Image (cartoon, rainbow, N blue to C red; front, side, top):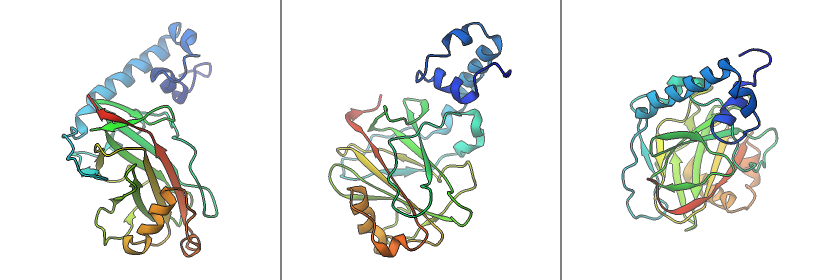
Length: 238
């Protein structure tokens, strides 16, 4: 790109239909047109890295972790450079909240989730978490859907403790396939210096997902708490 060209972030927003104000520039710029075409080719080449969404079993609050043959981060920022934030997170601990990005695969199409997006049964999502500070080493992730039940994702073991954060720019291991339980999905991400365990933290995570504050004993542990409310429509992804 030249200094006069939009940034890659702005071009990705244009490509994904989120910002059409660059249309006139793109129409007359061979460099930007070539860059956009290259991005489309990359997405087509890496679409096979996502595990196809198998029909979900009709259990409440069930999301399934599906291992990928290769990590999405292998294609790095060449995949999608747009950082599209879901609805503003709720931060209850001191310091900045963890920047969380959710990537969605639906019918072979990859995109970052934005506030205007929703989920369908069969969508596969991956979660990217950026450390707010250097001492953050662990993450605990769960969700509460319309049934009010807590689903444990990272770790999936109800007796387990926080998983290690991956290197910067890489997603948490595996994708999550959305089931057909009613929405919305209230996703909670707790980033901490030391591991947290489901037996002690599970009820606090469930309450936080539903709008309650986190208890003081958790807030005193250098915790960064983020809550994302992801709308969910009835039906299944094509």
